Amino acid sequence: MQVIIYYVRQLLHLSGIKLYLNMFGMVISGLLESSAILLLVPMLAMAGIQLGGTGAGYNLPMFGFITELPQSTALLLVLGVYILIALCQNVISRSVAIRNVEIQQNYGRKLRYEVYGALLRAEWSFFLKKRTSDLINMMTTELARVLAGISSFLQFITSLLFTLVQIGFAFWLSPKMTLSVLVCAVLLSVFSRRFIRKARMLGSRSSLLGKIYLGGITDQLNGIKDIKSNNLELSRLNWLHDFTGEVKQEQLDYTRMRSNSQLLYKMSSTLLIAVFIFVSFKFMHAEGPNLLLVILIFARLWPTFATLQSLMEQLSSVLPSFKQLQQLQEECLQAAERSEEEGKQHIVPLTLKLGLEARNVDFRYHPQESHYSLQQVNVFIPANRMTAVVGRSGAGKSTLVDLLMGLMQPESGEILADGKPISGEQLLPYRRSIGYVAQDPFLYNATIRENLTMIKPDASEEELWEALEFASSAEFVRALPQGIDTLIGDRGIRLSGGERQRLVLARAIIRKPSILVLDEATSALDTENEKKIQEALDRLKHSVTIIVIAHRLSTIRGADQILVIDDGHVVQQGLYSGLALEKGGMFSRLLSSQDEAM
Ligand SMILES: Nc1ncnc2c1ncn2[C@@H]1O[C@H](COP(=O)(O)OP(=O)(O)OP(=O)(O)O)[C@@H](O)[C@H]1O
Image (cartoon, rainbow, N blue to C red; front, side, top):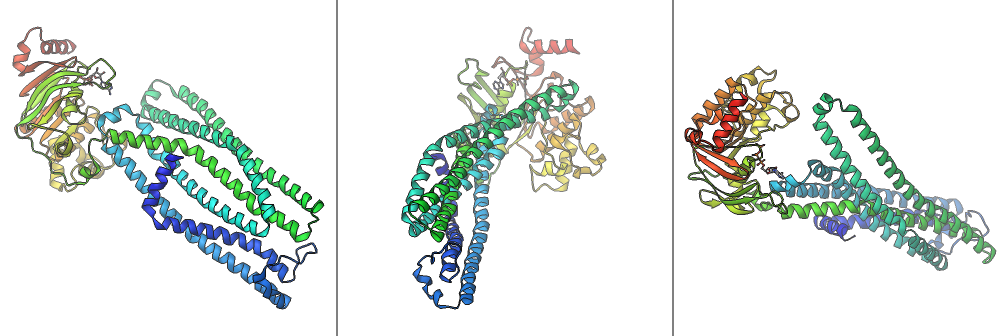
């Protein structure tokens, strides 16, 4: 429960007095609702209208004057009061309902903003350890469950207050009867604790199933080409068939548990009413209105107990979601690479003047493993020059570049830009100075223009086309049906691999970065386009610091420096011509293996 209270406190902090007013409104509304019904019987009795039995009605002094009125006037008055109470109740509940949505939506927005903000501030290595689908699940289903849980908690508090008022009312009408009902309710709630435990267990199972479903379906839709080309449709459908069987079972168990609990409350209510009426009639010789009173107290009180029980079950079932959300927020906080305030500041990109340096860098993806992805790496990358990083697959090239971009922090050692460590306040200005083209180019499902202006919102038409020209994209963009305003689909699916790569390059260049990082950026290009990009990079290389990861060694002939990495170590360093001559060196081995492959 503590975890729920933690989030409810935040809600209280955000909505302040509004929330208390609303809860008060809910209690008043409930009170009016019950008083409308409860008062109707005695008021009608006072007006001389008996609802069965021979009793004279309840002795309610405040309504004494009614007996002095003619019966039809009294009836009209009583019904008028009844309508007035109902009107007040409905008006209050209308405004409470609207304000409730406003309060909950405000809090929902704040919570989503906070959780997503925390995710965005977390460092890259945090995302390497998480499944994207789990994070999506947290941001959608689990967060929605938490918000529903908060709403249930508030409903629970209101129902509790309402029940207390109802008990007070019932006590006023008949203390003995009310006490008996309360004793029965306490006994039943002790017995019902097992339903609450079961609800929590089923809630965990439901969360887990939600996670598995989203993970599985995301994986499969991402790999739909693989599924189709390997004829895996049937096996994937079988997976869904088995999985939905589990979901069905879980839903059935949950519904069975809740129905059992409600059945228990409803049947016990019927049974207790029967017992009470029998005892009142047989042993206390109660008649008409008194028997009606027994029914009224039960009819009003017992459903509130059933509601409380049902809300407690709902709360228990979403408790695991609360815990997961809190855990995610804590993990994000621990993995935060900067504070919220830093992110809000206006960031002026850094201009690299001297160069980048990796000093005594060690890095492991998992500290518990003995294998280092990089070990004792010492390199200097001069500003406004082109540095190429080469090596066998798995040598550590991407790891080095990710560290140089400040996406991850070394386990020991330092990454310095112009002699200053790229962490803390330096980090965001440094990041802003980088243009990056990944091996697997990513584009948003938007128009080409939107993809470019996302990076530089104030880019002029001229700047957009300049970047497209640079990346040899202008020609194909002009040929598209809506030109630069063409929608390129999910991850740019409506474009060819080479076109995507060129657009990402245009996007990287549009901000006029001080550092340009290209991870195999020309791998999907044909020889003609590759040549054009090479020429453009050659023109840039004296005004921008370029770092390229290259598999095709022919593309880095013009590099000012080549770093050869093997098994996490920098094993060679120098110019293409010099390295090619070092017989037996890793670079010449890479060269000869590429020659053989051609
Ligand atoms: N997210 C990760 N978690 C654990 N280990 C990783 C992760 N990413 C890379 N590694 C390991 O770190 C080492 C270096 O990987 P890295 O991706 O830097 O190599 P690379 O030279 O860029 O390879 P490639 O040319 O195939 O892209 C490899 O042993 C790899 O298995």
